[in-house]
Amino acid sequence: MKQFWRIIERYYPWLLLLLGVDCFCAIILWISDIQAFQTLSGLVVLTSDCETLIRDAETDDVSREDR
Image (tube, rainbow, N blue to C red):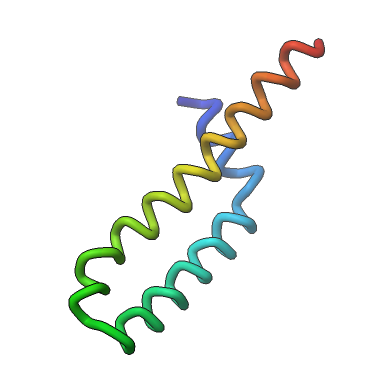
C-alpha cells in the first residue's frame, strides 16, 4: 500500500490533469446527451485513471528487473 501512495505522489500533477480532462469531457457529454452522460460518466473516469495506474505499475516492474 505504501508503494501505491508513492506512485500517486509521483504522478500527482498528471492525475490532476487527467481528472480535469475527464471533467471537461463529462461536461461536453452532458451538454450533448444527458442519457449518455448518466451511462458513461463513471466509466470514463474509471478507465482513464486505472489505465494510468496500471501503466505505471508495469513501468515499475521493468525498472526493478533492471536493478
